[in-house]
Amino acid sequence: MMASLSGLYSSSPSLKPSKNLSFKALPALSRDSFSFPHTSRPTNLPLTLSSARSVARDISHADSKKELLKDPDALWKRYLDWFYQQKELGLYLDISRVGFTDEFVAEMEPRFQAAFKAMEDLEKGSIANPDEGRMVGHYWLRNSKLAPKPTLKTLIENTLDSICAFSDDIISGKIKPPSSPEGRFTQILSVGIGGSALGPQFVAEALAPDNPPLKIRFIDNTDPAGIDHQIAQLGPELASTLVIVISKSGGTPETRNGLLEVQKAFREAGLNFAKQGVAITQENSLLDNTARIEGWLARFPMYDWVGGRTSIMSAVGLLPAALQGINVREMLTGAALMDEATRTTSIKNNPAALLAMCWYWASNGVGSKDMVVLPYKDSLLLFSRYLQQLVMESLGKEFDLDGNTVNQGLTVYGNKGSTDQHAYIQQLRDGVHNFFATFIEVLRDRPPGHDWELEPGVTCGDYLFGMLQGTRSALYANGRESISVTIEEVTPRSVGALIALYERAVGLYASIVNINAYHQPGVEAGKKAAAEVLALQKRVLSVLNEATCKDPVEPLTLEEIADRCHAPEEIEMIYKIIAHMSANDRVLIAEGNCGSPRSIKVYLGECNVDDLYA
Ligand SMILES: O=P(O)(O)OC[C@H]1O[C@H](O)[C@H](O)[C@@H](O)[C@@H]1O
Figure 1: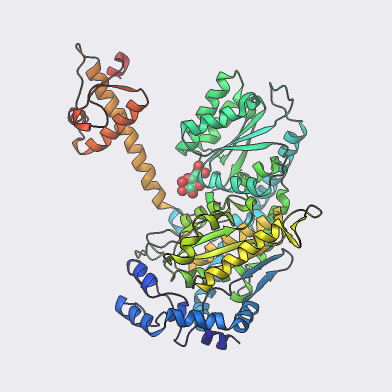
Figure 2: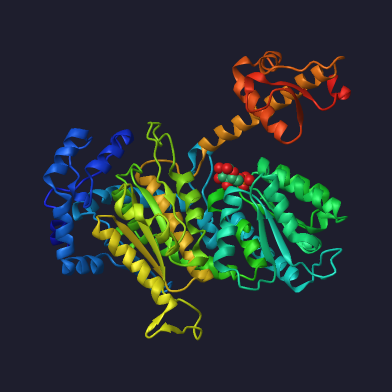
């Protein structure tokens, strides 16, 4: 059957995308030449722009589109042939609207077999993150028997037990906040960023009941106004707030700042933070040591062998979830079942391999197209944001495992349907063709017994269903590829399965394109640069303080500040620092205003003599 389907997509031979293919050449190729179907791509790589254009001339987009639309039988056959279902989880995958060929699948086979082997080794405890010399063990979290050492198995099991016991005690009121009239904890304030926030946020939005035993709020930034807002919203309930500070490294500046701000709010409210603080971090990290020395209410471990973006099934995701009354053991079961399903070495029966294969096909194996994720369910709104980190931090890499420059990646964005249909789907349908879509469909509209027909024979949920199917068809009719993942209901089990599905797909895809999915060297560059800006600010302050302490006060131009900081090349940054401090009432501008940098002369509001001799 697939032979005939190859014919349906193209008469030309299939493409094997190559890692030799230059990323820079691709936007032009994909926009100009690779209109749907992708079988119009040439076989002999590396491609040149002219060869790609000549192929595009040979295979007319319009003809291919017509052929597809004319042949619903063939499309239905393709749908059935590639349809995947995991019965126990009630999860289905449809990749029929991605135009890969049989030849492409056959060419990918050896790469997948190598990826399966690498994944098997990873699960057995190999150093799968060679740059950091670390094992990669998030799969053990939902099946502790897989852990390569008995001590790790015990650690995982004991941590899970203690998470459940602690949450039970908090929910039941056995552990009480020291000075709350409520007598029990009512709120969670989660402080963390990146992998220490996105998972808990996604799970809360997807699974928290309407009236959870504890409601959750997040501080996931060093934005003072955002922090103030969260604390203000808590109001007097700060006294019954459990503050969970999450940081794998225990040294992330934004998280530290969030903690210091919250501790200040506690002090000002006359509350004892330590009795309401919980830390989730690696043993002996800065955060761990602080929590231990200050005698916080509880500490839970993070592990060296679990990455931030795959930490959702560790205490990072499980503790906040359990406290909201979410069945975390069900989440783990869903993930474990999906792990099992994605261990098979038959591509066709492995949903994660099918996803990775489609990503490779759709983006030429170099991220030349973006992945737009569209869950048609409000509670899954944050799935695309969660996937953004999982996929982009894992796959966005400059070098491959052999040290070649590859600038790999796969861009992920999206919110939810049908909402986005009224925002940017116009461009997806008619505009620049630089994406493929992933629809997440949920079969169950509402809990049983609550549905009603808002017009004869049609419910509100039928509209949502219709919008999804309509968008899928409309995109396809205009040559836009899509994947559909269907779950029956949004439950802890299905959410666990979705997370595990994408974790595995990312891991397999990384192997196929020969990169390390488990480190993030690029993130360090921004952190280092931020630290340099703050160090420069301290030098600027010291120079200004010295000039302010003179009698009479000596206002300085930007040039003079830069010279005295021995950083003339940093004059633009110094200007920005002054403008920012001025906007926050931290310096006085003697002459001019911040809008005209050449005119300003600056001194501080007051001279700090102590700083002069520091
Ligand atoms: O959990 P933390 O150590 O505080 O790290 C929080 C985040 O920091 C960095 O930005 C990393 O790139 C992320 O992967 C990580 O999730």
